[in-house]
Image (cartoon, rainbow, N blue to C red; front, top):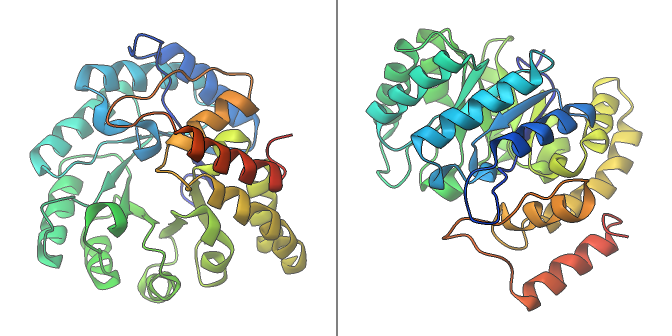
Length: 297
């Protein structure tokens, strides 16, 4: 199974100036750095990019800056999903206008649609864009799970739904997706720490938070597994999993944004409320985890 957008997609953070305004150019420079450090593709304005606090105009500026900077070096996928189907259609139209390579569309949150509601939502979205679509299933944030049979029904009727970011944390669900989906359908792990078990049952790529501070390790892990060097993949996994887990000791993207400021040449700037910096106690806990896992020297 060949991953549609490459094996490693970084769910990149968004940079802000100290006054809280969008730093689109800084974000674009960082996107270029990510491509130089293991990323096959970039996801802009996902959860890690603080998408819920970005306005339409800011997203347009951000998408445009990143696409211009990368200039075809790597695919740019943009987050367009919401819990309003009409708004998602509008965002997908913007994605087409600015030249995005694909869109990530999250399952509607808060509304808690039925499986039929999921089907109708994504079918409508797919019918109104020519762009390739990755469905994002993250029950921990949306409150509902998109089941494999619903995905199979969608893929049968919507050829531009090319993959899924599966963040249910459920290995058996990934195995079921692999069993019933066409061979060219791309299953991306949505959890860094579950990459190896997901690969073992059919995933072919990862949409990663951890790779904001260098994706080479994750690339090496996945490539090793695909080449059949399972022993090396397991050894790399021993290093990667605690590093990835450390990024979720406080709500994402709070730790990873601080990590970027400490572990890369970039200054990503502040968070937007309701996200805020870690407390002193939280920071001590997270920094200790980074030191113990070798991320922070």
